[in-house]
Length: 418
Image (cartoon, rainbow, N blue to C red; front, side, top):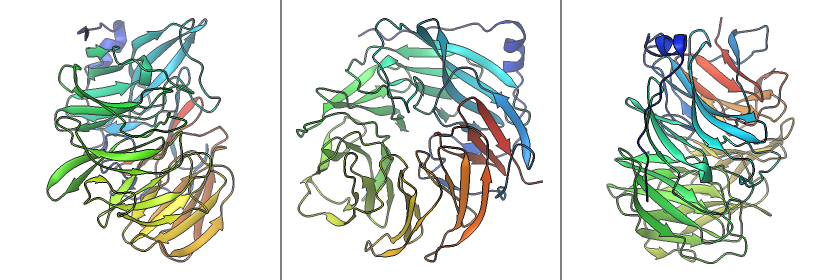
């Protein structure tokens, strides 16, 4: 294995701007996909509930290329990835924007993707779908089978790793998770799926664990979740045909649960001693599984399951004792997290890929045409507001210090209550 260490130089004024680290949003913190807890919950100054290109808009920035990664927002800077066409190739890039103005501070090519050898992607996917992670002075970006990299806050590349080989189906998807000194992600491709742990400081592979069960279709795109069980950290990661929890330092499988399903996308959530996750295509279920098991817990630790309204793409959202869901077809649900008792199921407009977010006791849902529906987080159904941007939207919200970020097909919007 060769893990390349390289440093890049930025052009002219971009390099100067990159050095101006003015922290305009004190305490801003949305460091990864689904926020500081990785479960889609925001705590901070109130967010707007109504917005448009004319209302509560702080700025709108045009983002080059296409990427469905969700933004990270830390210390007054927004980080995201994109893929810019270069003839038949793609430039896989990391960007940093000023959170106060939307100005691009730096824009760096991380990898060049050769169009002659790149596998095709799904029409709803992009070549830059995994979301970045910001931790301290480092930014981790991941492009699935195309490679993983670490940059510093000024955009200099610290390390890259393009040695993790597998056969993707429909392109890249799931984001990594950072736990202690390990960067962990799934490589659930067409054959021989596995989970890998990289040394976060160097990018070198520390361990690789094959999925321990068979599945007819083996591919999936899930983002791991760090959970704590009896004082020890585990990394829980659904895949095709089953899900497993791993010991982060060496990748040892601790327990697993089997099911029918593949192309699993939603990130799990955790609470009340249970993990909640979807089982994927073609007929999804939402499972609630106890995390205190060892080995195969399929027959012993599944507490409840929900079939009608289980999402294929949006992640679940746990707020207190209630679990909130929105299916791809727009069926929203509120379920008692401990028992699976259904409180309500109601239609909301449109089709959904973006994951829901909770802020200030409200549930923010965003459909694929840019329309948001805001619900009250409680066991009775109540719509509080609706808002819209006039573009396609598959990425999930990010928020910090009263700033709401919404990524569309060509732009990044920043909204703030005025």
